[in-house]
Structure formats: C-alpha cells, structure tokens
Image 1 (cartoon, rainbow, N blue to C red):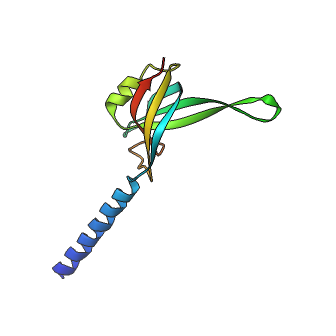
Image 2: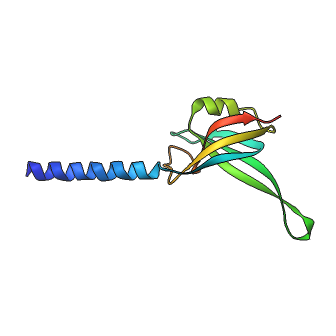
Image 3: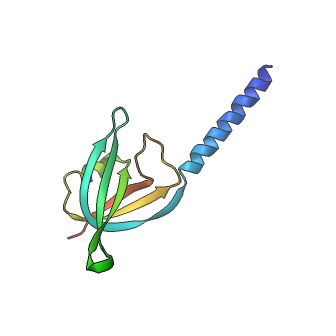
Length: 119
C-alpha cells in the first residue's frame, strides 16, 4: 500500500512540475516602444507591478486617431524601480510573453525584463 501511494505522489509531482514548466515557457519575445502612461503596484497579499504603454495612434474611419495601449507586468524589483516615476517618458521595453501567468506573477502574460529610455 505504501508503494502505491508513493507512486501516485511521484506521478502527481511530475505532472505538476511539467505543467509549471509548460506555463512558464516563453511563447514570444521582443520589444515595444512608446510613452509610459502608468505604472503601479497592485494587489492585497501578492503585490504585482503593472504598467501601460501608449504605442501611438492608429488611423480609423473618418480620420480619427485611436490610441493603441499595451498592458504589461514586471517581475523584477529592479526593473520596477527603474520604471517608477517615468510616466510621460518615451521608453523601449524588452518583454517575454509566457504561455500562462499565475495570479501572484502579474495580470498580463507580458513580462518586461529590460528598459531603455528613448530621448
């Protein structure tokens, strides 16, 4: 009976480990540039760093301009410190998009790991 429980626990741990590895797989990676509109820390128990970048306007019908916003999350505290207080500045952000984020990681699947200020 003890061997059966041990095998079940081992299989369960392997499945959970495989699922975690799959969800953290980098699906895409790249850069986006624009004006940083907001950056904040959210959450009650698990604090996450969330931001929004204005990528620029997109032309629509009747010559109207629609803003193109991009939401992102930040895991690294050093990157978060760099972004704090940079609202209104033009920045280039390098990001990685993962397959699935857990609630303690952030609200979006896009995680910024590098910031460059554009003058």
